[in-house]
Image (cartoon, rainbow, N blue to C red; front, side):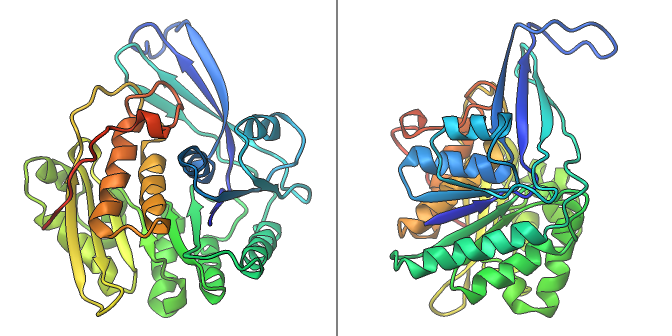
Length: 335
C-alpha cells in the first residue's frame, strides 16, 4: 500500500498558447484544462494508473471543484476538510507552442496549521496497519507546505510513520527541506527512507552548484552529484534519488542488509519534450511502484526514469499510464 499526503493541494489550471509566451503582451489561449493537483496527488494518480494500491490524503472539503476533479480520477481519497482545511489554491501553467512551461503557483491556505492533517494521516496509517495488508507500505509526503504549517511538519510525520512501520519518501524544497535535514540530524527516526531532490534542491542541502552538477552529469561526470547525494546517506537518509533533468537520474542508497552504500545512474531516453509538469512526481511514483513490487535498487531507478521521461512527452498536466511507457526500460548502471 502507498499512502500519499499533499499538504498544499491545488487545482492545476493549464493553458496552451499557440506560440511563445509574450511577456507584457496579450496571449491568447487555444485550449485549457483543470486537474486536481499537488505533488502527492500526482504521485497517487500515477500509482493508481499502474494498478497498485494507493490512498491519497488531502486537506480539502469533500465538496467543491477540487473534490469533484479528484473523484473523476477514481482515486481512493480521505478529505480532511473544515477547520481551515477546505481552501484549495489554483496554480496556473502556461505551455507555449515550443513546449516551454511557465508556472505561476499560489502560496496556499494560510489558516491551516497542520494539526488536523497530522491527525488524519496518523489515523490512516493506523487503519492500514490494522488491516493486515502485506507490506512493504510506503508513505509519500510531497510538495510545499502551506504558509501556516511549521517547517518541520514533514520531519515530524516521518518519525510518526516510522513508529508505525511505514517506509517514508519525501519530496519537498526550501524551508521544509532544510528543516527535514536539521531534525534528521537530531532524531534518526525523522530521516526518510527516500528523499527525492533535483540538483538545485540537493545543492540547497549540502552546498555546491546545482546547475554545474546537472551540466557535468549530462557530460558524463557524476562525481559531484554522487558526493553530494552520499552526504545525505551519511546523515541517516535511506536513499537519495536525484533527478538531473534531461540527463536522467542518480540513486544513492544504503543496502538494507549490510549498511553499505551503492550508487547507480540511469540516463534518460531521448524524447521530445511537450510539458515538464509532473515529471518529477512521475519519477517518484515510478520509484515507489518498484519498491512495493520488490524491485532492487537499479530496477527501481529504471522505473523512475521511465516514468519521468515519459511524463515530459505528454501534454499539459497529463500523467503517464502503463501503455505510455517504453516497451524496454532504460538501463541503470553502477557508478
